Image (cartoon, rainbow, N blue to C red; front, side, top):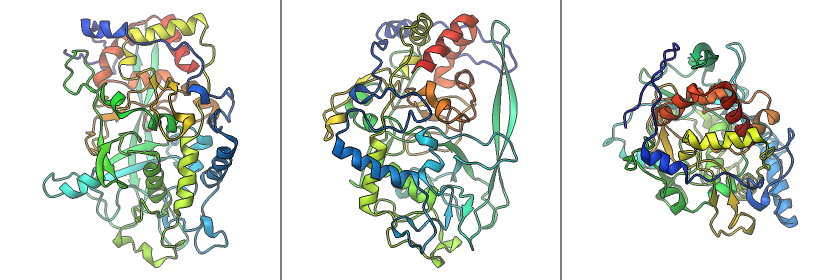
Length: 471
């Protein structure tokens, strides 16, 4: 099915009618009929602490484990040596000194609002182009080739006596979008600069990928979705002709030493919560663990000359507490779902084929934790990779994900994001300040849906946004 392009200068491509296959699929998309978005563990708190509660069906004894994990997630790590030996070893290079430093109140991070303000919860992943034959082993285990000297992530902070790798500066360029009824929406496009590198020149062929911290809610439920349920939605060759060709990422599992389904991260490059968390400890805070015994510090940077917090700074015990906490953050219930405008928006969500990627519902598998088992959940994601077009492309491959592809992010909790963090941004780099901005950045496999959104009258656009804000 050919895909039209929509130019940013206000000239519109004609509405692309959905194929018969896509229209048939629409009738199969369910509409949420319960406020219990996260199953029996859903919670009814909707204020600035809405993302920080344990699963409502978590036992009292497990709530103690949750609290311990929360303390390691929330409190800052410090430079070694320190009297706080359970939480020392920060750096020498790092981006933040706590998990909460990026996942603000367990929610989304944000991009710096102006060129003069430092980044708090947005960082740059780094790589250089790979040679498939020469780099086969590193691609199998890491999914990309790190940049010489600077590694896989630009670290903009350092402990005393060490220089940060460089400064990251974001410049914002306005992009005007004019909708069919004459409404003008001003988007902002980020331009990233790496300034004052302290460890020699950056590679001429450097690839960068901006990443903002995603919300933490419902991760254990997403980990509990059966692999077969996710893979059943793959359609890499678009055999049904709906223009949507989602595919799973296949990534390296450090525990089993095998290639498995990717679930977490903006490109689904991590297989499970524990590996995702330990990767963040190593890259974001410079802390070692059994799963990630090396930080992103390269030999040229001579980090070994500084004291560390032990051979493995994050013990297995702490790692397990962190993983349990991350897997146990509850999803808030839906609000106002019976309001006529919200119900109209839900219908439009399906009619515009948004649900083809933002798959509304699953039933989790029978897993070790009873509170996560057999739960009917409404995350609005297919967990698959999709080509989102050149406007959102980063040009950096990661395992099977190419430079245009991103994993469909869950939409649950979307309407509470800026109540938790008022400066929270949407999309992988936080560029979208509103949900409408996020919608209008969609292209690639979403182009047909966005063309239709642009043609909606204002009252219907408002209904769709009201639906998203009810999630």
